Length: 381
Ligand code: SAH
Image (tube, rainbow, N blue to C red):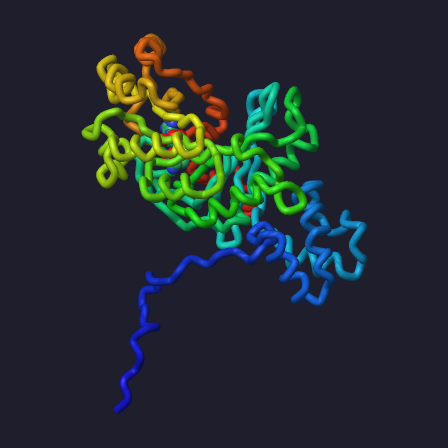
């Protein structure tokens, strides 16, 4: 009697890997794109032409790629530029200076990105995962758990798409060119390490290979995955590191940022200081101000002692409301006292603006819940 191989037995399908999206030119570096174009039977230089449309001119419609022979436009664009982000909804506030985009991915997952225009710069906040597995109790994304990692191109395309929105002049009073990218949307970027690094390489490579942003204008925010922070320091990239600290003591941080149960405050700060020493970049310490939870004067003093003399800047974030949360933002006088104590300790500190709150686009509010009553398909049901 022959026995059946057991390797493919997975009755409840739980071992299935989530389906990744189709390959896109932003998944590949320029030589990779050239190889792909050659496989299609086209001359390699077409890869540069299509890349220049996408990254240089922010054009993705094959009709507008008039330097390509009409007969091959569709084939090239279809292969190199499959649609990855299907727009579901775009919301604006702050007179159009803040815009939140909700996308549906090829497998139905939902992710969000936020565009923020300022007088001197345009920033996009992008997602690196659908959902998040880090389970921070005050963050809306953390409540739903992780659906899947985004592909490199799904990450890059958020920035390229919103760069196109900025270039169209949609953000009045801001420069038309996207200048800053922050990995502060949904997901834990360092938990999707290889794809996030590849995405950063595309964002900083000059056109036509990439978007040509400055490394210093890219910020990677993390809950503090220590081995990944150390690995990031060893890449030849000097992006800004933001560390979501939220508490200076292990007892509270174990609760607010559960990954602290694995890597303690002292370990994560050591990794941050090593990152600062290697890259010369000041580390941004993120601290959401939560009323009566982490906003006591003694915690400000403890934080001040941990950070004094280090290459660090504290960003206090007034807690943004999330559905069902039992926590509130700290009152302004408490916040002011916290800032005063940190500054007295010699630590540079600012309070972050709460851009996008009205559209649930602010820090920790990106949950990608699609309200059925705003879904056009619901109206036909
Ligand atoms: N997972 C990464 C990237 C997300 S960045 C990280 O945690 O760093 C989003 C930032 O907003 C993080 O600093 C996060 O801790 C913070 N945040 C999450 N929920 C928030 C809330 N409700 N109010 C204010 N800030 C919040």
